[in-house]
Image (cartoon, rainbow, N blue to C red; front, side, top):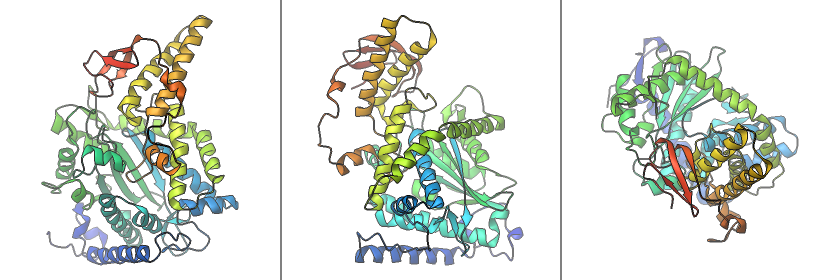
Length: 474
């Protein structure tokens, strides 16, 4: 263990160091242990009781179910929180790499960091109370410590000079099957780079960049090695550490070195390029090294995309507000159901969404439907041909709906979980029409769902797909 850093003020600290080296970190760890212990005790006494949360602030919500109740009473903060939850959940379902988002935090009357009235501490309490997966519970304990650290850094002025940088990778102790069930996107082993700091207005902001940890389903992963290289380039030793150890050891970086998460994403890409020998942009291959301007452009595109779908998110939030969940689990499951439907409704026409986010089998149909949709949009065609294309798209949409499975963050609800909660019978056909298949044809897939090759000639025959790259659907 490195010697603790004892400094009278922030200006005496080095430019880059692990947070655990701060002398006060031992106190923060004890605070986190007390919170975790209290949650465990609370669960053992009243597992199903949700009306008396541990972290209680007057007239604010501590979980999504409470927010829905307050929104139904007309509470403006609760209504805003529903929309933020809807937007965040959708983004995490639709974009597994190449996306950057920022969340501005506020302080309540007690000085606690909040997001529209909900304290960050209460968010962690909910994760600790309701997560079922033991590996994810361990990760939630680390997140609880991060939240307590962030509160301390904000209170003591650490964020005026530093940013906390944390890498959240797919759990490398899980099999792909286990990781996918837990909500990780294993197709590209997508990871999150999180940067927390204070902006120029003095407000604390959480910035996140989603980056691929391998090129495609069949490619070799580079996430762990790239994360170690990332830390080494900052002068921090992650050698030999796994995903969970790295997640538990965030880094404080002077903002003159890393002013925003775009810089962190670029550094990760440079590290991945060193490991793989290929230029990377948010973890995906490209022909030339990206510049700072490329990252800024992508961020601007992300913001515009979010703004453009504001109406759809409003509808999800409204439908959520009209629901009557009896528990936080039912609330998050309803949100998952609504956003899963929205994602499937948009995925054919919105090519900014990775076709693979609904799974490999659905991705073959998404690629096919997108090709048909482009044909419909590209040229004047006869009415008979237009009707045939629309019938094909409709049939493909039904197959996408049946085969596709989306997930948000690890631990979040998937549509597979929704089936069990809402009584779907295992093996039951959700749509008898989906047994009908489109006519045999050939088209160009922008990217193979399995090997990642681009512009692949694909043959659809008897309901199966065969790519010239050698891959085929089941």
